[in-house]
Length: 60
Image (cartoon, rainbow, N blue to C red; front, side, top):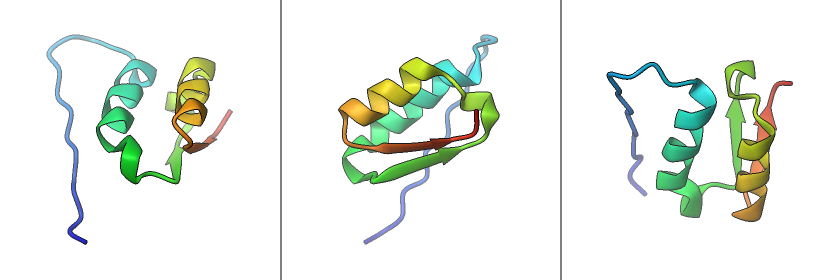
C-alpha cells in the first residue's frame, strides 16, 4: 500500500483543532487511531474521530 501525505495550507489564522478534523477527514477510512500533540486538544475533534471509529491519542 502506497503511503499518502496530506499537506494543508491556509492563508487564514485558524486554530490547529479546526484544521485537524479537515486533515483527518481525508484519511478517516484508513485510520485506526490518530496521534497528535496538545495543539489538537479539542473535545469535539475527539468525539468526531470516535464517531468514525478512530481512536484519538491526543495529549490533554
